[in-house]
Length: 115
Image (cartoon, rainbow, N blue to C red):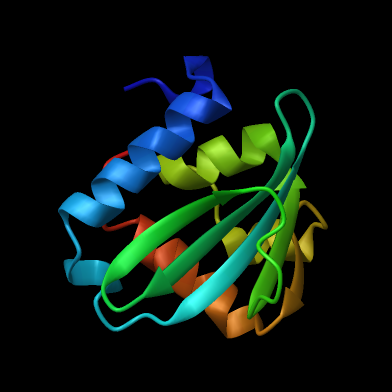
């Protein structure tokens, strides 16, 4: 799967499918994230984990535990496992509001899947 060639709609569909087909890594999560992606096909998305399920929200998810802001290209690299969120945060490529530990948790959870 070549994330760089996929549209954001295709990527979010794939994320939803994988997270809900293999719920093991998200079983204990009860967290809502806001992801503001900038650039081509950017937008605001929500990713809500509750009761062993993941929900993708196209648009503002409302109250969240952690907000992340990054470029679309960096988000695709993060999903592919080619972006270190800590280094990106230190370089200003990733902005986090809220609990930074939850941002790291999201990165670790996403590494459990093959995007």
